[in-house]
Image 1 (cartoon, rainbow, N blue to C red):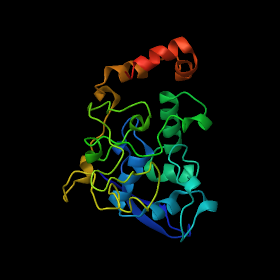
Image 2 (cartoon, rainbow, N blue to C red):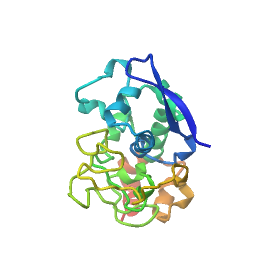
Image 3 (cartoon, rainbow, N blue to C red):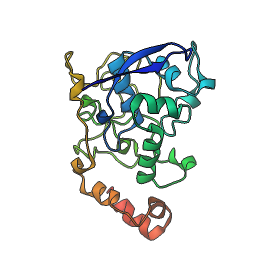
Length: 235
């Protein structure tokens, strides 16, 4: 059953109903597609989303969102309590744990391994899914479908940013040029969001990488002998 809950409006006094279910979130899903699904279901703009969930001191009823606050890697501009209330999951913790599992590096280094441009699988995105794996700079193919990742709109060739930015996608899952990245179906049933789990990853090299439990990616990157083995995973 679809949940209808309430979130705060810009004055933190009035409330409005929104639609969401926590089981629409996949393992290793990125905040980008989680937020896009929320915007799609509730017909809200990036600015409205930001103002509803950002830290109180960053709220801007009008005007632009500063670049440093659009960040989807650390989610540093967002209020943990408000996200938890809306999504029924601690999204900041969820995102941090996923990043640590993939990268195992300190937060200040994470941006070095994830691309600032959105890289997406043309199959995954049709079902509203985007993985943190897609943003990893070393990967050229989707681990779930073995198809080449795209980093630009196939219609206008604009690069979409991996962040909240109305300049590039005012409508959820749409480029500013109007290209819809979702399944071309105006009757999309919201209870049919397809979720992808780790056991659906096809790429055996990625499976090997994710299954390393005793050797951290930090060692892969900084220990020469292990780094060589790590590089083999992507060649």
